Length: 315
Length: 272
Picture 1: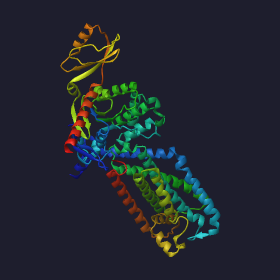
Picture 2: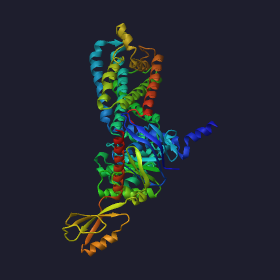
Picture 3: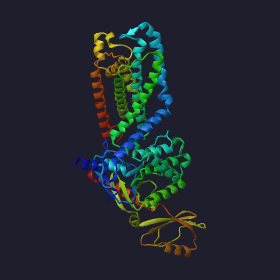
């Protein structure tokens, strides 16, 4: 049984925009799954249908075998959701929000209070439990939404850009927390614009573009498809001209920075040997862009070019 | 066989739906009660002040000159109407403001993503509206006994009339909140429909005082039946047939509940 199973899912909004054009997608139980795509690609619509905040136009969607057409209550009982926008009552305290949310899932108040304490402590919100929620910082509000989504101890946790606008330190602590939740058996579906986040946390990935699945693979397999990568090297001494590294395209960015393009068949050892031979010392090295980002951009651009070519042919 | 089916329906895949629904309903009611108490200055006090003003101005000052209405002193005559008026406005106001506030602040999504069915969400909000209606009705009743002697002829009728009226207007408030796109639309119904209907609903006068055409128009006003059924429980007199009044209230409650449920099931105003 899949945690999420989607077949021929279509959503056409009243204004005629077709946000989903017949999507098929399966997410395995226990997976940490990334759902990526440019703005307006259909990610939030898909999540909206899975959480019953958006009505689908056609197709099927089931969560742990509960078809949303035949057993919506059963499907909803399995899910916890962290939406993109803050959507709790700003005039209630974090503790009240959590206890009430648990109540909506049939959890008695004494159990709900214990769970609220557990998650408020784990997400470092315990000190703020009685404050009015509107007084919380942006990062705290995001963590409160994660705590709220966990109150029913869902089998499937859906996070729609959970770390948007959160500083790097809190983001990394949230990653650790989510990794722990996933290791305990909760299936997680994550949408994010931070591709580093997807690469760090997720095992499998689907890229949605213009309402269709453009790619669905293991992240590791996808990264292996990357033919060339560009590395940025920081140099100890000034360099005034591009060195000649035969077979490796090189660009001098400034007098202390060099960019080198490396294809899948080549290796980094060779570059370092040649640089050493030229008396160039490298202090540090990094990828020019995140590898997943590179794949993402190539996929999206390729689909854009294809669509333009098709339009051109028609006209 | 039927019990097996029922059991399967309530415990599919280990999910005890009846328990979820009961706890969920209680949670909505507790949250609504908490809201009424938290903002008591907005929810409970203004009606007591308004009722006192009505009793002082209409009952005591003007009422003395009016004399009897329907064989009852005017102060006494308007008391049930004023109680009912506060029940109507407060039940409506509670649900429209709470539900629209939740919609506007998007925290209605907390309920929409939960496994609670829409009929239960409606019932929870309506219970909140009835609670506020009865609490404010109780406060206004306490104020009214300071000014008028309230005799009770038929207590079950009083309770049934006030409960049904409160349910009807809570449902009305919910439908208004579902359909409203902004705060202006939330205020439109109470200002232009509810208040005129209430004032022309026999709160301050008996319809027998009106010219014949106005009496006919008044009989199309559902609030007239509610106020008169309630007043009948106190004085045993009414401008309308009490059985017809209760039939209208029950039918109105059923139609409004059905409409609200259809709207939420279709996602009107709350889902895309």
